[in-house]
Image (tube, rainbow over all chains, first blue to last red):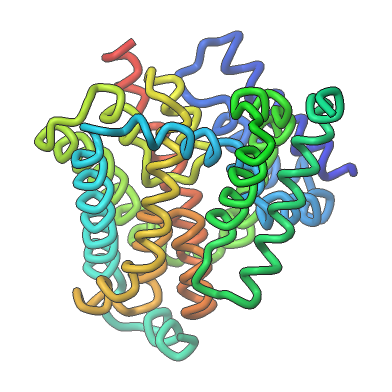
Length: 122
Length: 228
C-alpha cells in the first residue's frame, strides 16, 4: 500500500500543479515527470513502488474500459466522418511506424559492441 | 432491482468481472484482444438490462481516477531501462521525436484532406500515445476524450497486428528499430506485441511508449497556446 500511496501522491501533486499554475502539460504527465525526478534523485526507492507500479501498468487496459464503452456509444454517430477517421488512423499509424523505425535504424551505431550484443540477444 | 443497478458496486463488479473474463478468454483465443471482448461483454449486459451508458460511466468514475497513478507508474519501466537509454540515447530520442512529430502532422493532414470534422481532427492528434496521456491532451485541446480513446485503441490494434509485417517488409526488423517503432506508433499494444518478438524489442518498445508520451505532451504546448 505504501507504493500505491506514493503513486497516488505524485498523481495528486501533478493535478494540483496543473490546476494552480495552469501548466500546459497534462496533470498526469507532470506527476510522471516529478516521479521520475524522485526516482533518479533517490528520494523514492524503486523497491517501495515497484510492486504497485507493476500491478497498475499490468492492468492498464482495465482503466481504459470506461472510455472504450464511451467510444462504442459514439460509433453510431460517426456517419460522414467514418472515411476521414479510417484514412487518418491507418495512414498516420503506418507513417509513424516507418519514420520511427527508419530514423532508429539510421542513427544506430553501425558497428561496435552494442550493436553486436543486440543481434545476439534477439 | 433498480436500487441494485444504481449501486456503484454494480458498475464496478460488471467491469472488473468482464475484464477478468476477457483475460481468461484471451489465454485460449490469442487473437481476441481483451479490451475488445471485455467491452463487448459490458455492452451486451448493459443492453440486456436496458441500462443507460451515461449512468454506467458515472458509476465507474473510480476506475478513470486510477488512470492518474497508472500513468505515473510508467516511470518505473522507464527508470529500469535507464542504462539502455544512456547507451542508445541519441537513437532513441531522435527516432521518438521524429515519430511523434510525424504522428501529429500526418493525422492532422490526412483528416483535413479527407474532410473530417474539427472535433475528429483535434481528437485524433494524440492518437499515437497511450490513452492516459492522450485523454488529457485531447481534453486540454478541446477534443473529445472518448473519441481519442477510440482512435488510440484502433491505432494500437492496427499497429500491433499489421506493424510487424509492415516493418519487416520495410527492412526494419532489427530489435531496436522494431521496438522503437512499435512503441512509438502503437503504445501499449505495440509494446505487448514487441515483447513476444524478443526481450530487447520489448524493452525498447516500452521506452518509446513512455518517451513518446512525454515528447508528445511537450510538443502540444505550443498548440495549446495557439488554439487556447
